[in-house]
Every structure is written in structure tokens, then in C-alpha cells.
Length: 342
Image (cartoon, rainbow, N blue to C red; front, side):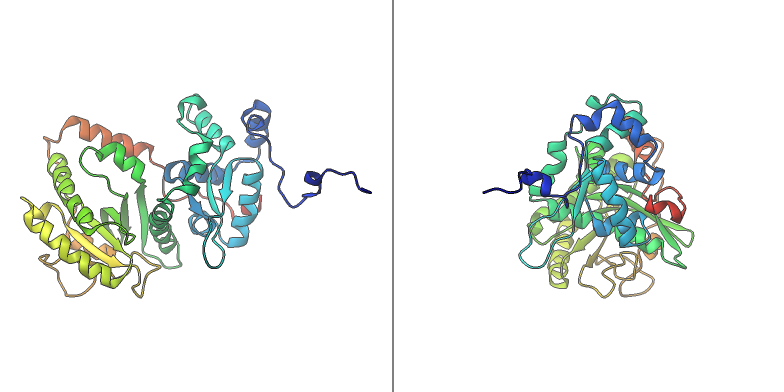
């Protein structure tokens, strides 16, 4: 005999209550969000739209003083459907929670930019679809590279900071007819600034495919008149050694190899958590002031930044200007510590 007629779903009090998808787009729900979303919340939503997915650790590195503060706020954003989350399967241990943009967050961004939400191009199914994508680990790895740079720039006494970060999707829209880098970034330190493309190798890509991208980078440098270093992040020192041989062979086949400066680094290096550290090794043939591995800012001295000539195609210049204006800053807006718990 059933003595407690309460439905089973009503006993699941540990599950956060969230509005249904349709309710999350109503004016009533967004009137509620208007008084609750801080500038930092809106910035995080924009970063998720740009970069697709962050782990809880990466979000902490981006904009929170502690893991506890991040988890506290992310729970609120999850309840309000500003963000959604999933936890991928791993064979050992427990994977961190992964966060993507949810329906209410996308609608808020659209209205903030004066757009019809239907024209934003956001679909919740697509946002959550990355949970099953074979590129999930790659995307998280690329984003982790940049969140580590953000964290390095926020350490006490840090002399450098990340000033720009474009996603793979943005790079594809701008340069996809020539090359598709995993990301673009700019790092400023001690009065020097280096811009770079990132190729994040997970060890699963054929080295011939990786090295063949150099032809596209040469084509891009020729079209824009801008020589942009290519940083190649590899999983192990052994993989780095093998890759450098393949890259050297391809570089020798280019008409203008000087247009494609390259430096590599293995993720199992001593300073693996600090991409700005002295762990970048320029490809053979580069003239350096000293042998060995260099800091990210020292590559700026090795390869001075060049301005585009006057004859750069107008379309390329316009696309670059649009991307610079519309890309979200890699650093969140200033916000008092007391507001983190809101």
C-alpha cells in the first residue's frame, strides 16, 4: 500500500528549478533578469557565445576570485537559464562541469545589441550539441590556453596581459578562404606586444595536415601584408620534435618562408600552466639573441610587428576592423568583490 502519494518528481528537491524554454524567453522572465544580471554576467554570456564552452575551472580563471564564488554565481545563472551545463563522461575520476550559453542568455545578448533574437543564429540544441562533439576536448584545450594567459596576467606583479582573443569561428569567418587557425590572440608585456595565430595540436591530427596549413598562412600574409607568428601547441615533447621536422620541410617549400614565423611548445613542459613563460622554441632558421626557449614577449623582439601596406585589399581591411570592434574583450569589466556573491 502506497502511504505517500507525492509524485516522485516532487521528491527531487536537489535538482534546481528552472523555467521551461518558452518561459525563459518571455518579457516577464527578462524583466526579472534586468535587475539581477551584473555587467560581469553579461560579459560571461558574450564570451560563451563567442567561444562556445568553458569548464568551471576556466570560468574561475576568467572572472572570479575563487572556485566557491564561481560555483555560487554559476548556479544562479543556471537556474535563470542564462547558462546551461553538462558533465562529459571520463574513464577515470570526474570531469569538471562544462558550461554553454542558454536560451535566456542568448536572448539577453540579442536585445542588448538591438537584434531580433531569431536573427542571432543561436539554437539551444546546437549549443548543447558540443557535449557530443568529437571536437569538445580540442575546443576546451584551446580555451584553456587563453584562460591560462588571462590568469597569468592577473597574478600579483604580472607585467603582461591578454589584449585580444578571437575564436576559431571568428577566424574562419575572416580568413577561412585562406586558412582556419584555432584562435587569434594578442599579448602585451613590458611595452611590447605580439599578435599570433594558435594551432592547438591534440596529437590526433596527421602531421602532414598540420604542416600543410603553412601554405594558407603564407597566402594570408601576402594578401594582408601583415606577418603574424604562428604558435603551435603540442601535447608532448616527442610530438613536438616530430612536428618540427615536418614543419621545417614544408617551410622550405614556401616561396616566402619569412612570412610565416613559427614557434612551438609542448604542454608537458615545466611551465605548462603559463603560456607566457620561457617555453617557446622558434623553428630552425630563425635568428635569436640567445639560444633556447623564449618567453612569449621575447618573440615580439624576434618578429617585430609589421603594419599592412597601403595596397591591402579593402575587403580584408574592413573585415579586420569589424572583427576588432565586435570581439568581446578577454578581460571582464571591473566589478567589486562584494558583488561576486550576488
